Length: 180
Ligand code: PRP
Image (tube, rainbow, N blue to C red; front, side, top):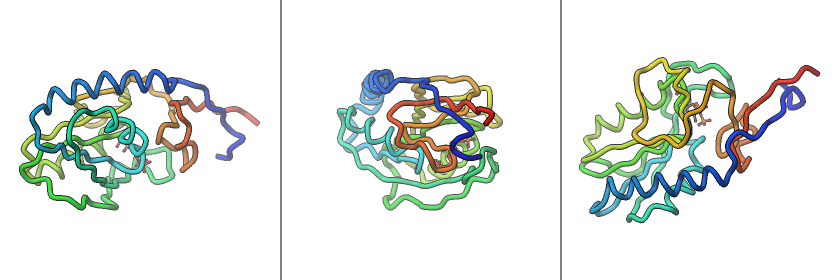
């Protein structure tokens, strides 16, 4: 697919994303109130913008770490095999942990990573995803907090890519394929 084969229509404006992050960060701060330090795990690469905005709204002491998982590569189809490409640097045993995901689609990535983190015995483990596409689910799983439920559309921007492009769009866009 070449660049000229699609256009991007705005789906969720950046102001709406910012407003929703403010709401969600308040709920997360209540859930983890009293924590000595919340261990926030960003799932690379798609969550890098979301986690940056989220932690700046969170009124809690935080430690930031990253884990990289991939199941799509440059493909539009999930391989359903989640590979851990980069593990955490920190230990999460006995810690309060928030896993930050950009989008839950089939659910394989969230399921795999949650199982991995749970096996390391955190004190409390919660998940947040900016976007949720429930119509695409293959694994019965849901994040504890969702920014926006969206229909089964191909989305890009705010960290999410199409063949490694468009991650730097400030809003969430919907890909519309056009005949050339
Ligand atoms: C994308 C996205 C989620 C995952 C969701 O990651 O960032 O992590 O797919 O899909 P699923 O629910 O069907 O498993 P991808 O593998 O494309 O890697 P990336 O974050 O580096 O783009």
